Image (tube, rainbow, N blue to C red; front, side, top):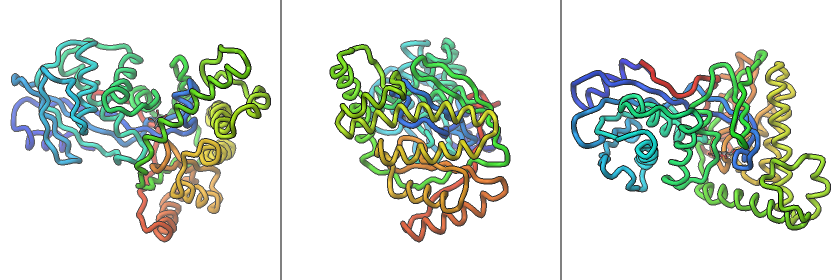
Length: 387
Ligand code: GLA
């Protein structure tokens, strides 16, 4: 997005005065490692080249005015009452500002303009981008204390968990802040820590196809999966009299044959998914480094099947797109993000994405009477000051 246009729009909304400062924070696509981040496991996301832009200008008034271009809505936040929840989109902003207030200094009045390229509900973490752009912009424009990278990531995750009430893991905020152009992040969420993995795509492109469907029960099911994983840990500790297992990611795959038969089928399936998905992430990172895209693709398909059959978080729309990918003979595709709708990621030979997408859209429309979205993505840098 052109910063000149954004600034012009800012002036139209808030009036003339000093030039605002422009910040951006990207959405993310998780390449592989799904439902492992809250199990202390491995994930491999990229920050993408679609961002949320935030323009900031301090004022001498005692209020925060925040305008969302996408929603065409202006709201006011009282700096003296930042942590009052409103159960609307401003809770993301309030959650972050209230975290900053207790960690980094006083929040004074400012005008804040938001404009996002990330489709909401697509599973590409528009919410993490909103949190990060708020945090990075507020710290610099309001002269607040700098926080360590991980502290800032956790502060934004906490805003989402405690303020918005979505009990998500750390992956989205991590990727939106620390993402790198040309690389994915191999995050070990148990620490958490990460290593960049240079993506050698060897003639392939990453194409996102967004089902544009988000199932309303998604949030409940997400929380249910988290509880099932906790129950599985308790049962394993009880049945094996070992009380020392703290996360499913501590289980080695060689231990599965002893553990799984002693668990109820559903819990066994959840455990198997997490343990094998962690293995797939490590393998995929190695293959990406070496440009072994066909093998990455196989891991993508395997991850999808496991999410569909063992973890049960896919949907007919997501499955349809993955079956389409198989029928087209591309190396790999999978659902990405929490599931129950949202997006899929496809490894498509360079130069063929337009045709491939057109066919996918046509077949999807025939089947569901819904037009999906689609766009190529490339790994980009995380949140930062723009001008
Ligand atoms: C959502 C959450 C993430 C992660 C994924 C599943 O996107 O926000 O923390 O748990 O689901 O991998």
